[in-house]
Structures are given as C-alpha cells and as structure tokens.
Amino acid sequence: MMSSKAKRVLSTRPEFPSLEQILSDVRGSPPTDPIFLLPEELCGDQGPSPGSPIPTEERERLFQQSRRYLEMNQRLRESREQLRERREELERAGAALEQSIAQMRQKAL
Image (cartoon, rainbow, N blue to C red):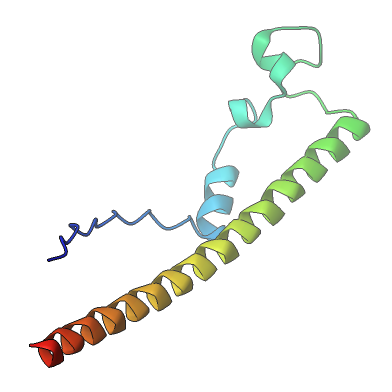
C-alpha cells in the first residue's frame, strides 16, 4: 500500500500594483522622499543636496537601471504565468495517473 502525502496549499501572492496605482503613488510623493534620493544623499555624504538637479550622467544611469528593473519584472511575470500553466498541466497529469492506478488496482482484484 502506498502512503499518500498531504498536499500543500500555498498562499497566493498579492497582485502587483497597477501602473495607475504606481504613478499615483509617485506623483503624490514629495521630492524629499527617500526613493528620489541617491544613496549618498541618504547617508549625508558629499553630493547634491536634496531637491537639487541630478547630473545628466547619473540621471541616465538611474533611468537605465529603472528600465532594466521593469524589463526584469515583466520577465518574472511571464515566468510566473508559464509556471502556473505548467503546474496546472502537472496537476492534470497527476490526477490522470491516480485514476489509471485506481483502475489497475480494480482490475487486479
């Protein structure tokens, strides 16, 4: 007799905020919000004071970094969807296998 393992039910992750929610949050944040400050500004190191313009090179670097983050986030969403589809396929295959095993046991008796 085979022992059955208890199936784990994983809690679902919260959905990502929508673009509108993110933009609303960013627009409602003051310029001194830590998200808009460079790391050296947070630490009080040398560098521009809060609210002063960011040099063009640094702005471009931050823009590219943000862009890479968004691209990676999109790839992660796509991967999550692919994994969900594969999990469903495996669950269907597992159910079919269990049904086949049950039928074989009935025939064997």
